[in-house]
Length: 119
Image (cartoon, rainbow, N blue to C red):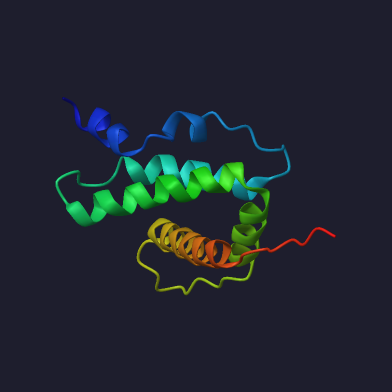
């Protein structure tokens, strides 16, 4: 089996993410999808850490395209982030940022429980 097919086995949301059509003026979403596409095919599929990171990235970008509130949070975080000049891999930097925001968002949204009271 080719390496690309094996990578796609770890990314069940690949076609949905690549097929997503953001608004014309939404440059951040277009760049995130492009970074996702470039990054997943650059990994070493025999490195378990990189494979796990791709699985998390796939889930995070899928959440990004399907959840408006999460999308706005990621865009806010990206706009408020400063990248240092000595950053060796800017794509990896932003991939890690998206995964971190996703983990924090999942923790926050699963802990908030709304109790409604009917009168």
